[in-house]
Picture (cartoon, rainbow, N blue to C red):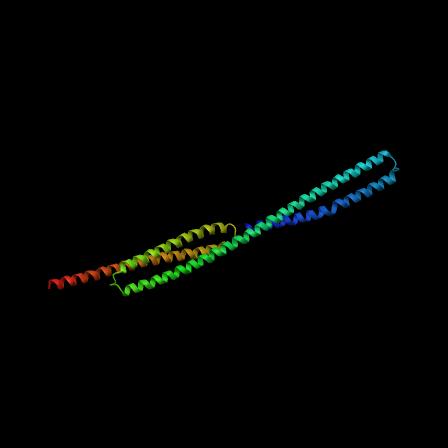
Length: 231
């Protein structure tokens, strides 16, 4: 889940910042406190000129310096980890924003294509209506075939676009929380495609009827011509 992963990264960043602040405050304070304690102990217990005490004191100072270096290294590592977490978090935010933008553009493009398809279907309906009014025209069959082929190509194009949308929806559904909205858009597109296919079948039936009427009209004209010739 993208949102959950982002939350985890934010928590890790907060923890790293807290550890970094603690590490920046404690090492130098500890060194000062330990130095003060050692000085008090050395002052009260023996003369400062004792070689063994001076040697112990130098060793303790050296150990404290080593501890301080280790603390500084830990602080650097914490800062490095914090920078990595923040960079990864920023990258995820950018990727999420890009995915949302890509999905919105895809839906916008698909909506425009759907509107264009509806307009073309409306134009084809008008052409079929005109064909019904001019059954005796000689170019009826050719024109109707072209209309049917054009609509068939349109349906195939819509089918491919639906396939592409389904593939994109599968990818986006694993990254976006708006799964319900995606499925809704997908269902609407599938319903539109089914309507387009039904309209194609209706046009093909109307084409068959028109061709039969044209054939009958031509046959009647031939029979009339033959009867007039025999007479």
